[in-house]
Length: 243
Image 1 (cartoon, rainbow, N blue to C red):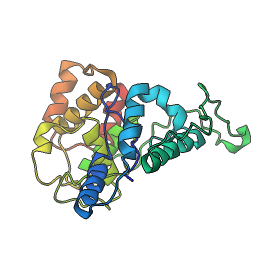
Image 2 (cartoon, rainbow, N blue to C red):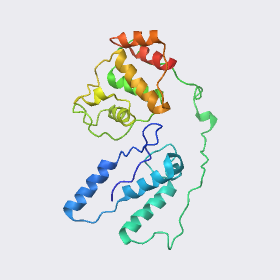
Image 3 (cartoon, rainbow, N blue to C red):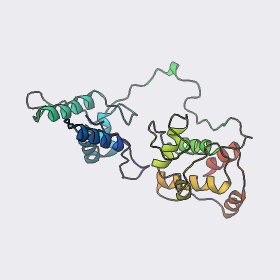
């Protein structure tokens, strides 16, 4: 059985980001080589995701989760597997369990929430330290509310996937944040410091992926930023705060 398909998209663009495609293709390859039957759950769920779209298909996934189904999704996807085994519609004998159009999220008791839970935390630790390449991407991804991936697809030779920041790099790639001159390199060098131009390139790409336009900044500030050879963590946080 191939893995299901995740509800993942490229930023705010209506372009599906198939993070589990390579895993599904590997299942198909093994099934072909070993001459064993295969049920393409990935293809069925992907078809559903594309037909309903990123918002309407959420009713089959756990709240705020792009991978794991809720009970309605589990019931529906199990029916897909049943059909693969038997060739019969799973709901001929058992009625389909339709998910409601709207879910009401259970709120945590007020006493459970920290006092500043509704305030945006703009502080950053170690503001005077030079920011590393992976840290810059992590800061940008959090600022623009992208989500780190738990899948790393071997983009660079100097990363194997077990690094704590591997999901950050994958998220930057899948959301179009990494510029072409970075993607053309064999190694990412995640612990290198970065210059102002590189950070601005990341920021522009993230802004465009999220809002469909480039950020505005004064010519003088942009000139100073692009001349900066090294940026601190505080520099980057300040820049993001004014965009």
